[in-house]
Amino acid sequence: MFSQATFDFLAALEAHNERYWFKANQQTYEDQVRSPALKLIEAAAPGIAALSPRLTAVARKVGGSLMRPQRDTRFGHDKRPYKTNVGIQFRHFQGKDVHAPGLYLHIANDGCFVGAGIWHPEPKTLNAIRSCIDENPAAYQKALKALTDGGFAMDGGSLSRPPRGFDKGHPLIDELKRKDFIAVKPLTNEEILRPDFASRLTAGFEHCQQLMRYLCFALELDY
Image 1 (tube, rainbow, N blue to C red):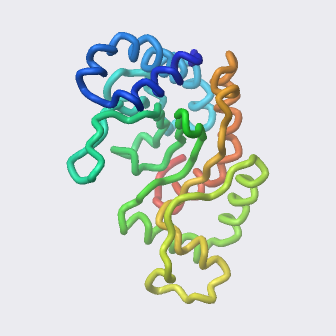
Image 2 (cartoon, one colour):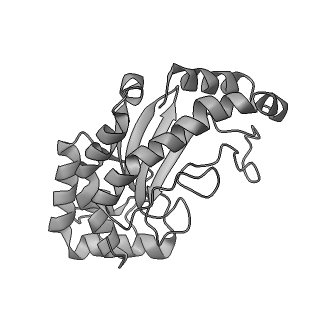
């Protein structure tokens, strides 16, 4: 599916991140990035469905599991028009965007990884997760252990002070201070390029199942 040519294109895009260059090399993008990504999504779909029928694996150029290459430059200082990574998200079908609970694959020259959980949830969602951890700490700690056993680690932003309504002495205060509830595991380029990567990818997500179930339980979503 993916090949060294995928990484070569991303490196070239890093050096020539302009619209005219991308348009001139559109077919290379299609052949070396988008087509392999869509094939991976197709190959991974049965394994994703086996994890949960509520997760989506949609091999479509636009509006599916493959995230678009264009960056949103409206609000940031960085005006480069294109992402220099491949992003694939298998998200919960009840979610409308990247902020929904889901599984994620990131491919880039500066580091590849898989992730699971929910990134940048809105305040209402964040409060629901924190309340669930406070009321159901044992299940959350079991989810953390399953992640650690699988080589995953919790990542993302955190508050510098305890969130409102929680004491600084709470035994899980570091978890309650999280602004993102995502678990991440690094991958090597060699792992990405393996012919059996799709099956290994979905097998690795097994370690994230307890976290995904917990987050969906907190948000009253089926899983």
